[in-house]
Image (cartoon, rainbow, N blue to C red; front, side, top):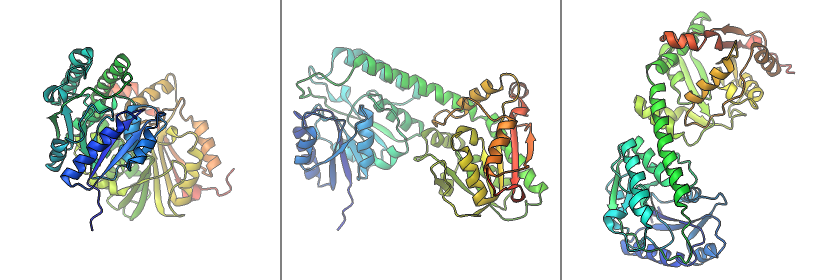
Amino acid sequence: MNNTITLSIVMPCLNEARTLPICIAKAKDFIYRRNIKAEIIIADNGSTDGSQQIAMGLGVTVSITNEKGYGNALKLGIRQAKGKYVIMGDADDSYDFSDLDNFFDLLESGYDLVIGNRFRGGIAKGAMPFLHRYLGNPVLSFIGKSLFEVRINDFHCGLRAFPKSAIEQLDLQTSGMEFASEMIIKAQLLEMRIIETPTKLYVDGRNRPSHLNKWKDGWRHLMLLVSTFLKVKLLLFYQSKPQSERIDRLAKEISSYLENDNLSKQSLNCLDIGCGNMQLAERISIYQPHTKWACVDVFKPIPFFIRWQERQQNIDPQRWSKYMQFDGKMLPFADDTFDMVLFADVLHHCPENTLDLLKEAKRISSIVIIKDHLEYGFFSRQMLRLMDMFGNLGTDVYIPKQYFTLISFANICSKAGFESPQLRVGVDLYGHSYFLKKILKKKWQFIAIFKKECFNNHQK
């Protein structure tokens, strides 16, 4: 017998005791009529009117989050969904859950995101406030369509459907009503198959005002659209030829060390700690084909903008089979697992865990290579922070208030049990650009290499 759940119907809920039984009954009617193996999840946002108890009494799943916001409730409900497909819709009886055939059929035909269009399906008299219908929604939808070239005319319809596997790629972050716009924008950026279907909007069954704050929520939608558009443009610029050449130059620097130390023909097991999207490890393996790489970082799921950048660069997603998540402090490997470990622009992002990471690197490997930034000269700290903020857009990486100096780097290495590194200050990673060479000084980049004979096991 096949117990696989095909569909999860997720309803965000905040004090919807009046309408919740109606919505659940209609959803059950659709499930029964279509003979689908399905579940109903009430994504509750801290109801105090008995909504949770009503849902449990009707035999449906209740997921509860105390983090306020429409987006927070839906993220939890979607995360807990067991179905191949998810259909989400408000629990205020403004949508007819017994009439979901178009949504389900379009999912079955291969679409990644199906969105209701209330303007095409019909809006009952009094179902949508005048300003929302003729100003807010049309204007924000027009801005979204124009900025991201997506053919969606109702950005804010709350009834929509998607395969769970597709939505997991979007790494949705927003907590409020702007969650609806974030979903469309990111799906479009990943070139997913998106379609609208006519949807009837009814007068909701509430006996209280809507949770929607038209000015505050509208502003948050607008800021999300504009900020994401600017972030995309900046990342496209950053990931252009100069960025690629910078990674290539760093890969050559590390490869030259292996060659000078007669390691280039040995089969080396290597680990990239804080690997990002693994471009550097891949590039080194091109110059040093005898190296075999594993990669670890703290993020899971993979940040959306890393996924998006990969699509821009046509990078093979299969390489993520090398990736492992860790806690940013303790490396999940036995002693002496690797011949070499690499920290490339990582340690300054985790000042509280730097010492632990260095000790762990020494434990699992016989060679440790560190490439990082160095405060050196006037305005270096400010420029390095600007570089970091620009280069880590969309990843939520911690941007430090200060960077290593030669003295602070030597001190932290000594505490970790490292002595007498091969240290090169002044790595030229911007030789492709006269302007960048003048602005971003060579002396702000350094590479330190510690070999087994530099390890002091009597740590301070």
